[in-house]
Image 1 (cartoon, rainbow, N blue to C red):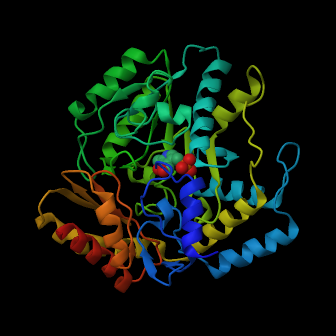
Image 2 (cartoon, protein in one colour):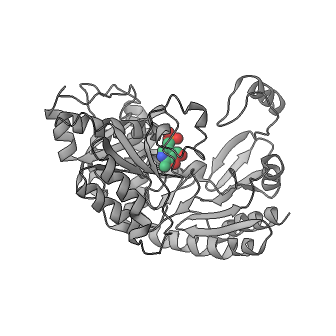
Length: 425
Ligand SMILES: Cc1ncc(COP(=O)(O)O)c(C=O)c1O
């Protein structure tokens, strides 16, 4: 199909994320992708600064990933998971249990991050229901969070930046406290955690769980907060008998410099959600991982089963992709690679500090963020990045880079230089 025709049909019939149908926002047809490069159908190559929204940590078209998937497709692409099981799922569950904090022992697979959050929320409600605390049905979270676009997940996204105000009267009302003022690397004072503690203390009878992204708040503002705050949250959840759900969907698998961001606070949640980079960006797969206490309590309580079971649960191809991706990650010197990327992001984005209308430049692990005073004009900025040969997709006031871990210095320099140049204009 010619580009012109493809774009015509796309414009008439295809809806893109967070977009209006049929309007003239440019979309760029991609013919293939390899390493850190997206190859457009017109022959241009773009260096990927986004890892396809946190996922493609090993880059694209990875020979080992391809081999593993080709071998699995010869055996089976999919079988239902009700009453059946298979090696890719079992091996992956075993691996996730080994890699995540010790307390997390039971793995529930699902097809996307948002669904894994729904599952975590349902687990929390069912847990308390099973032991007779039927009023514990609500959730406490911090502002500026993002947990997905399904209804339960939306209800715990930031009410303002979460773009969900339209659904305000439809969503379950949850408890929100301000996002931590204490930033990454800073201590957490009693005052910093006071609102959180007070809300937990007064509403504990109706709160099933606290849900938050550990250390890095992603799509809700790309903020990095104090590990001590997270540690205090764990202590307070224990003290007031509330479960803790950590959403590691964006942060998991090395992105922040730790395999899981909760390791910065040296804590374990009661329930952890993972997705995105789980399969190295090859397929959609997520998992909700919980403790024996939670899984056994639910299984022994009324109605004796956990009420969830997606059709594509533990899809064998997706589990195979995840196993291959984890093997590649763990066999690589990923920590030193992240440190290298972190240093170069800090040096390369540093000059943005001196530009007009820049609020902040911050870097953690393989995440570099430039926060502007005003929202970016995407219609102007997006083509400029493409002209510069890079794929950078800002949102709101945030221009950010989170490249594949395999990116080499020269390509990373092109990315940071493009950000500085485009923002200078
Ligand atoms: C922290 C976090 N939680 C949940 C989600 C939702 O995941 P998905 O888009 O796979 O449903 C995202 C996606 O950006 C996320 O960043």
